[in-house]
Amino acid sequence: MVIWETRSNSRQQIVISTVCLIAGIVLTVALRDYGEAGSNRQAGFLFGVVLLGLGIATLFAGGSQTVRVDADTREIRIVDRRLIGSRMQIVRFDQVQRVEVACLQTRSQHALRYFLQLQLISGEAYPLFSPEKAYPLAADPAVVASWKHRLDMMLAAVAQAPPRKTSF
Image (cartoon, rainbow, N blue to C red; front, top):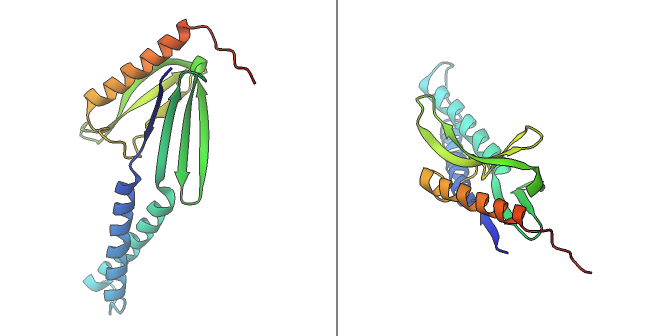
């Protein structure tokens, strides 16, 4: 059977973090002697501190995610790699009740990113291709719908096939 593996684009997150860090450093250093309280220079200095903190936080919290759908082992393996560690989760095919296309929206109902959401038999909803990770073409609903179709086909094919016996 086919193994489907995809990775998020962590470069986009690293660029945003780096821009925040550089802008924060420049503002903080340039406006460090901001003068009297309540001045524009003080506001610029404080904004620089906020950008610096935001850059550091996103650098440590950001990372890459790998999703591997393997029909032979009948599992979906999600690996999150961050600067300070990694985490792996496994969702077995028999735990998945259905697959839905979901989206992350702004308050004005404009969709920013689409992703797949697994509805598990336990009633839990599990996001696949997380919206906070930068997956290529995740802003295109047609592409994410094709991901759903591909995953539905893999789940259906495995449901019809008997389990494989592995020999050691």
